[in-house]
Length: 367
Image 1 (cartoon, helix red, strand yellow):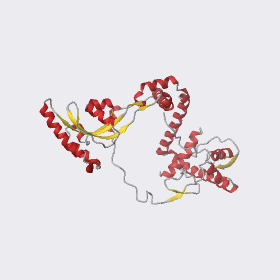
Image 2 (cartoon, rainbow, N blue to C red):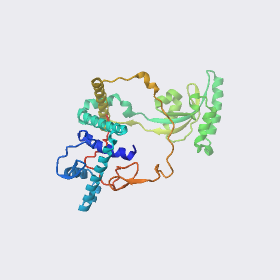
Image 3 (cartoon, rainbow, N blue to C red):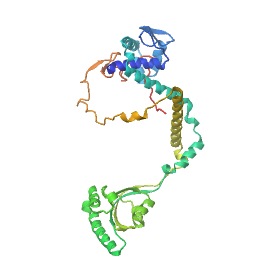
Image 4 (spheres, rainbow, N blue to C red):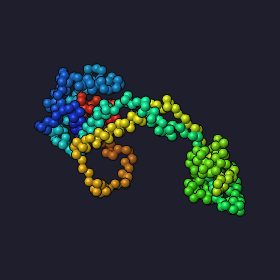
């Protein structure tokens, strides 16, 4: 079945499902108990004034303004009638039994179940201050961050003897002269190349000597007190240090970034923390709910079969240059508006609103 037929039947089936309709054994659309003032009857399906009014009220003021006069209202009603006629024919052909349609409906009703279940079970207002303070206290690292500096270095390791130390320092001083060459310092790759060629720190030389961001404590532990003091005493980005002595190596540093200390109080982040705790509670409640349902309905998973699943990592072919995989072919959407043929029931504002009761697939976050 093509996408236009799938979307058409899916729209009607979804609306009927969410409205609590019962399947129609005759093969037509599910019958919804429409109460109100009938405005049209199509294939046994009643469309009421109240349904259409609700649908109009759901539109933006800009869209509603298009239907202010009588002729436009007639067009709106005609659009709903046209949709119901197409739906009746789709059901008559058995499109509602298509496996893809049924799978999509299943996803929609699962979304409705989870949303309604957890809108009542876990509410934002139920999150207590005690829970917020507990989370804040346990996650201080997220809200209290020390001053940080980023650097790259060229390291020259030395041994325990003075001769080794002197030889390494001489090599470091030569590289420092090259690193501080103002004519070449503007080239961002210059220091990187020096690190790759001369550094004895195998862990960082392939990354151009990049040490990432360091706190004062990290800088002292990795590079020594002299390097820590130089790194945090200045603000100039791309400054090059003198040769600095570390515990087992001489270092030539290039400062590449600075971050100020961040200290956030509980009151400053209370709303942020509340949303995090709320999501965690919903996730926990959702997991418990699913566990209950597994017990209720029975679940059996053959773990030994999971490895049989194969993942194709090949990228799909690029779309045609004009961006239209169907060559620009259009068709009527059932509301009198031309649509790309894979979007027979699109949501373009220029189109008439979908029929009364034709709910969209529920969106919003899942637990």
